[in-house]
Length: 128
Image (cartoon, rainbow, N blue to C red):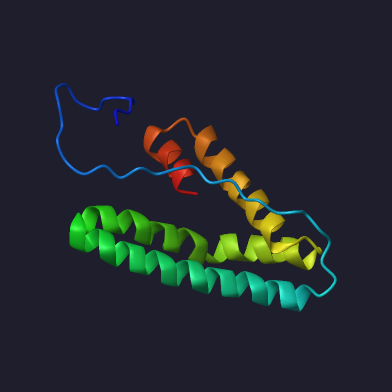
C-alpha cells in the first residue's frame, strides 16, 4: 500500500508508521435531568480513557520509545486539566450531555490554540 503525505525531510524513510486518524464524536445531543449522574458518567469516561491511553502509551514505549509514548501521556494531561474539566462540568450542570460539553470545550481550546498564530501552540490544537 502506498500513502501520500507531506514530507518532513528529503529522501526516503524506512521504519514503522503510526497513523493517527481524526475521530468525530458520534452522539445525539440531549438535555440532562440528573446532573450528578451525568458528571459521574463524565468522570467514569475520563478514568476509562486514562486507563486505555496508559496501556497504549506502555505499548508504544516498548515498541517505539519514550518520546512517542509521551505524546499519548500528554493527552491524559489535557483531559486532567482542572480548568478544562471544570468548564465541561459547568456545561453539564447547565444540563448538557457530557458528549456535547466535551465537544464544545474542546472546540473552544482548539480555536484558542489556532488563533495564536504560533506554530508550536497551533500544533497543540491537534492534541485536543
